Image 1 (cartoon, rainbow, N blue to C red):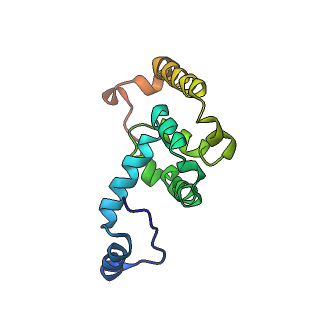
Image 2: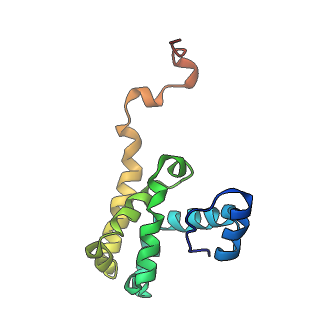
Length: 141
């Protein structure tokens, strides 16, 4: 998928130029990057990347650094599996990447993730579980 960032691109002509450079449209690139970032929520996929030496490739590490733009609110709202953003942050650290070749560590990550998924809804404040129709109308300024 498309891995290049185009700086300073503006307008329709620049969009066509970006497509020539990256090999895909901005929309296709965004979709591919979103799909890839969300795969990072899967500890087994992280193990695959580690076992296949992706984390030894400086270009791949630079790509992971580039993908941190997904933490920005305008992009993060598109993410379905928010734990991928946690793992994206952790992948910026070599110490974490080095641990990913250890199957025991991967199993531990999976267990922690499962525990979080089982319990996180219980920890939400009561206001977050209320129905929209129960909310008071917005105050006029």
